[in-house]
Amino acid sequence: MLRSTQRFLKNPLPTAALAMLALAVPAHGQEAAPAAAATTPSDSAMVNLVRALVAQKLISAEQGQALIAQAEAEAAQARAAPAQGLASAPQGTIRVPYVPETVRNQIKEELKREVLAEAKAQNWASPDAAAPDWTRRITIGGDMRVRYFGEFYSNQNSNQIVDFEQINLQGPFDVFNSPVLPFLNSRQNRNTADIRLRLNIGAQITDRLGVELQLATGDDRSPISISDSLGGGLRPRNFWVQRAAILAKPTDWSRVWVGRFANPFTSTALTTERVALMFDNDLAFDGVAGEANIGKALNQDFNATLRGGLFPIDFGGRNFPSTDQNKRAFPARYLISGQLELEHKFGEIDALASVAYHSFKGVQGQLSEPCLVYLGAVECSTDGFRPNFIRKGNTLSPLRRIAVDPTLPAGQVQPQPQFFAPTFGFEVLHLSGEVTFPVFGRAGVRISGQYVNNLAFRRADTCSNGVAGQPFNNGGSDGDGNICSTSNPTSFIGGNQGYQVGIQLGTPKIKTRGDWSVNLGYRYLESDAVLDSVTDSDFHLGGTNSKGFIVGADIGVAKNLVVGARFLSGNEIAGDPFAIDVVQIEMVASF
View (cartoon, rainbow, N blue to C red):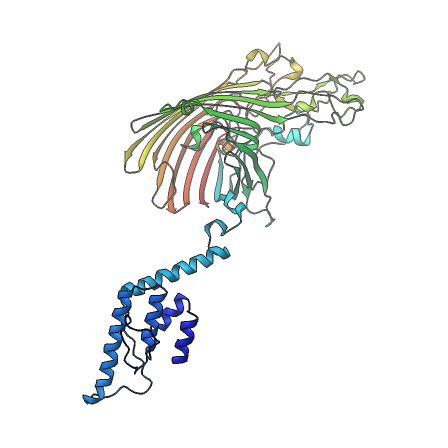
């Protein structure tokens, strides 16, 4: 033990070793002189250890003196034990002296400082080096929905609702003379199920510049649905790029989107009955958009936000007509939109109102030059005007002016293979507003309303292309007559307005268990109020020329897990009977 103590005095151990040595005390030791008077190493290891701790300034001189005095007292007690007749301790017994709390705390703090210093030097416990820098600039989230979808049709529905989308995809079709045409299902009920998976990825490049990406499911070419039907032979599912955009924030009160991004224009349908009047909730926009909150810029207590954007729909084919050596150019289709939104709080009441204008360019069909189909022409001059996608409800007109075959025998019908496009242009005024106020606890009431009016709708344009361009609207050919006939015209039954009102009671945003909401809405949308290809895809199974009620409820069953149900009862406004009820029961998990 003496040799060990001498080595210790020549090469002091780290603090952790000293702490261990402080616990080891021999059963019997020689009496040591007080530390203050000692000038040579003592025969007591404890005395030498305490002196080393004092020399290292790990304990004070006063604390060292107290420990030495305690060691002397214990040594004297050990020597006196045999004389008093007490049983001596068994050979090899180790006695552990009491170490004051202050000394233990000092040793602990010193050890902690040494460990943290080593961790920082080796970068294995530094917050700034715990993970690569790029991981702190990436965010990942999304949601998964599983839904039952029931479609229920009236037995009184017409079974001659023409599917113009399939005519444009598979055609041209002779809708005037051919007995074989594609028709929509109008009487057969269906029970299906679908899934929707959305994966959102964000990357912050700088404080004011970022990239957003959304990958989503989807099993058809529809721009307004990213649901994927279950079944289908257990096939694997498609995963599409739904959004891919650069997001910039030039100032604290402005934003700019470039690429493909979510609808930048507010819609009260997103927060009440969840059925959009103007743009479907799943619709993504291509192009560039920006917003500026003037109220925030001026440090006012209200929001006055201007939004606008330019969105290409179709740049036009670069090789049209594909069967002609002489190519044609036709106007590109695109959307120009602007919106002013005002929001203000009156105590606990939150009021929001907006006015928007959406101008669709190049979507109105144009009648072609005389098309020599009888000489083998397979493309006509305005075939490129047919829409990329249509649903149902809009008034449509033929695009082709079929030239009469001069060799056609008398009484023989002239073939009319056709494509179709909207009869009218679309310049849509969209007004919306909502009021939210609390009622009890976390529950509140939200009342919303929307109105749309297609200012480009002109009844004078209905027959601008004459009898050859007679329109079809509301899903059929309007009986046996011709709207544009000069002798026996049938009445035109289209319209250009629509509205939707709704009320919601419950938790504004359902996130945790026990959150809930119920809602009720009514919708009325005439045939040509909006483009049928961009409005809601669930009510009346999409499109326009529909009216009816919406009832729904949602409840949070766990954190970020919501179960909901909706009943959408839609009927046609005018034209052939076509009533559809939709039932949805769904579970949505967010992450």
